[in-house]
Image 1 (tube, rainbow, N blue to C red):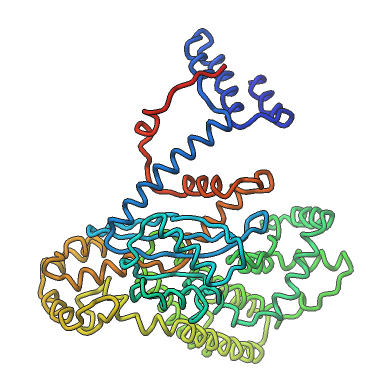
Image 2 (tube, rainbow, N blue to C red):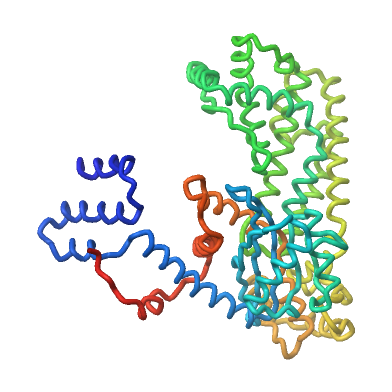
Amino acid sequence: MKKKTGRFCQTGLEHSNEGDFIKKCLIDAFEILAPGDDKLKRSVSDVQLSRHSVKRRISDINTAVESELHSDLQACEYFSVALDESCDIQDKPQLAIFARSVSNECMIKEELLDIVPLKDRTRGIYVKEAMMAVFAKANLPIPKLTAIATDGAPAMIGSVNGLVGLCKADQTFPDFWNFHCIIHREQLVSKSLNLNNVMKPVMEIVNYIRTHALNHWQFRILIAELDQGLPGDLPLHCTVRWLSKSKVLSRFFELLDAVKLFMEEKDKDYPELSDLEWIMDLAFSVDMLCHLDRLNLTLQGKLEMLPDLVQSVFAFVNKLKLFEAHIQKVDLTHFHTLLKASEQVTSASLKKKTDRYATLVANLHESFVTRFCDRQLKRPQITFLVDPFNAETDCLKAPLVTDEAAAELEMIDLCEEDQLKAVLREGTVEFWKNVPIEKYPNFKRAALKILSMFGSTYVCESVFSTLKHVKSKHRSVLTDTHLKELLRVATTEYKPDLKRIVQDKECQKFH
């Protein structure tokens, strides 16, 4: 045990790579577990774990995964792409391009197609050039493209000079749908709540406590001394992290008495902390942001289907109507924090505040309706995927179908398929696997197109989180090629055939 602990301590002094460190730890372990097995120790010593060997292995795995990905995309029935741009540790703009494909058997895959450094400005023309180079490298069948999902930046969705506008003007592209990431839209809508009167003093107090080491330490000691089962700390707020604001406000409300006591000890005057009306505004903000966060979390994840995302958004829109009706009647059933804060105010004050909150919820509802109006127009076409037997006969339009009249007849025929109605209970994907394309060609292809569509750029945001760990301040000089290889190997769902990869490799022992 002492030897293993010493090995860990030495890593702070020795600048060996991780592979050498792992090898030394394994040798130390075998000296304890099998002290007389010299053959086992030699086998471990012969393993090549130098940084150059690891780099070559990652490159080999990336090549195998990339080849399999390109083959699947070329053979798929339809595919869509999601694009987003972010800067790495060197402030170099990196464009992440993900592909979502669907086969004729309804097998859905989402994979990193490429991550490309934008060498010039992040304008639509440069984004399109980078995307077309990636398409050419993968030999993608562009006529099979069904949709492009982006983060909503002007360079992406501009109707003339944006990526979408340039692609729609390009004759090589088919008629496709374009989507502004549904998660980005939800965040833009949430800003219409206008919580500045709450956020401004909360952020000032949180920053005063958290950005000064002594204040932070003293505040944590104060919480421990109060010994009331309180959370141990206040989190910092970050505008980039979508769920951060709700967590900060919720924790601030829980620690309100401790914060008030601490600021008084520091002679910092914040009258809001004793203002019952402001505390009610804080409580309303906590509850409302918690509802929005639940929606946000349901929109996240890989392999999410577009109808499910749209359904979650419009279900929340209906919830907002319910919230507004309840608040107008001073029914705080769905606002637990506000209900707790309202116990200290008069009925007249509570009615005045709830009238204002009802207006805020109504404005939020209107913002959702306005921001998602295009999804509402396409909703009959999108939701037919999950409920085809109750869809309107004429719901399918171009570009989902090429022959609308034939699709209407197929819809009527399908509604009489009693056996398929039973299969639908097993799940959407399983249902469409059993729909014969020979009998329902327009119907099946429309379903495959929707299954291939991204509804958000969540996968891009996810890979950027990985990028921050892979290309950190300790590894800031990674080449663009190595960065792409590391990200693909880290995020892929493919299982590379390692035996086939190593069969042509010559084993070299460590000297």
